[in-house]
Every structure is written in C-alpha cells, then in structure tokens.
Length: 122
Image 1 (cartoon, helix red, strand yellow):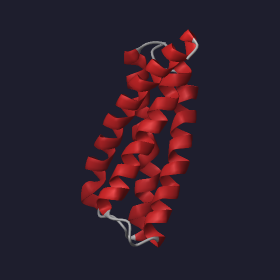
Image 2 (spheres, rainbow, N blue to C red):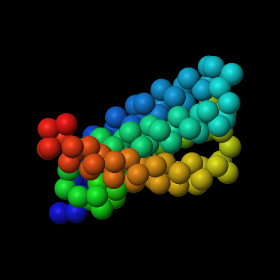
Image 3 (spheres, rainbow, N blue to C red):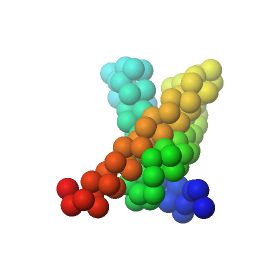
Image 4 (cartoon, rainbow, N blue to C red):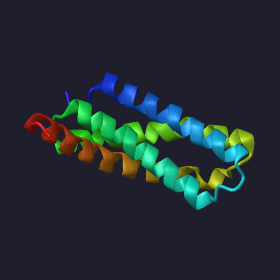
C-alpha cells in the first residue's frame, strides 16, 4: 500500500488542531500580519507532513505524498474558521491550500530523512 490512511489521518488531525489554534489567534491578535500568519500555516502544514514521514519511514516518495495530503488536509478546517470569523476572503483559499500541500510534501520528505537518522541512532 502506498499510503497509510491511519497515519495520514493522525498527522492531519494534529496539524488541524494546531492550524485552528493559529486561526483563532489571528482573529484575536490583530497585530499579526498576513505574511506572518501565512508563514505559520506553512510551517504547521510542514510539521504535519514531517510527522507522517517520520512515523511511516518507507521512502521519500511515500513520505512526500502522505505529507502533502496531511498538510493539505490540515489547513482546510483552519481556513474555514478564518472565513467564518471574517479574517480571510474566499479568493486565497486555493492558494493557501496549494502552499500547504507543497510544504506538507517537503515536510514528509524531511520526515523520511528523520526516520533514517532515527534508525542510525542519531
């Protein structure tokens, strides 16, 4: 099997909780710039991908694919919350999701690297 659905679900769930916290923080802390929030969403999507790749540890391509899915899924609830709170417009939904998919894939590849280092004892 190429993907481990339970791992994708767990990584996406962890990412979603963190992404929702960032979206809530964005609503109440008005000094956060949009660039800062975007960077935070990118890093949290990459973290979800990293967790998937680290736990799976079955190759860079599998880690990147699962990481991309986990990263993309993790940003969707947070973006929905931002829309409901009026902090975002509907135009940037596709862009934010695409960025989250890309950073999740990179995180998944780095997670595979972490899995290799873990096996080597580092």
